[in-house]
Length: 214
Ligand code: SIN
Ligand code: FE2
Image (cartoon, rainbow, N blue to C red; front, side, top):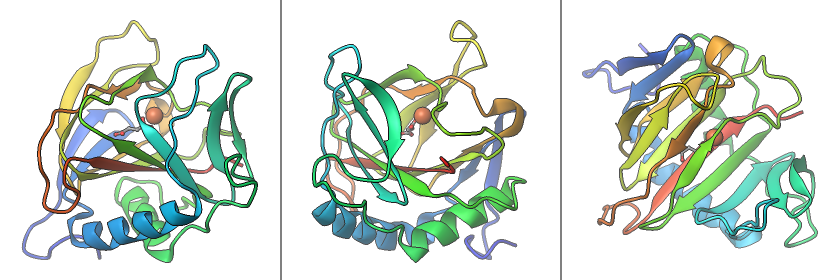
């Protein structure tokens, strides 16, 4: 039994693809604490709407914590050690983030995961993330761990080609998705967030994606 699951309620595991697992409610017990940490780190490195290389402004607001952060601008996508907005290092990854990410990865069969970045996404109603794969990390042996907090989202997950069929899953607060191995470079995205009200976040969804970038 995982440290992070309610002893009375085993975590429901749903396989999205070989190497990709949805752990329903895995982060329920930590949700409030994780959100307090998001609040604190966003005071150091504020949420911002990044520009894509093609000149669009992303509808999802982002920030990071850890040794590096993911950024996008007219010159491309990359990880960098300094926050371009503040000129300072990103805030360190909170211990509670690391513990949860490692426990979820282990639960999904990736016991040696040591993320060096958590990308923090903030969705307001109407925000979405178009189909993409997380490929800017130095090597792809390590999984991605994605934690959903607040309003539910419709997350779609497909295959290694953009044209592969996708399946949509509702992600509720506390749900964790882990993808690695043969699914590491699968295409995925988030459909337009529906408006609503969540007790922990109001009209907002927060997503944490843990990556080993370096
Ligand atoms: C991502 O693909 O990086 C974020 C996914 C999500 O918000 O659930
Ligand atoms: Fe992604």
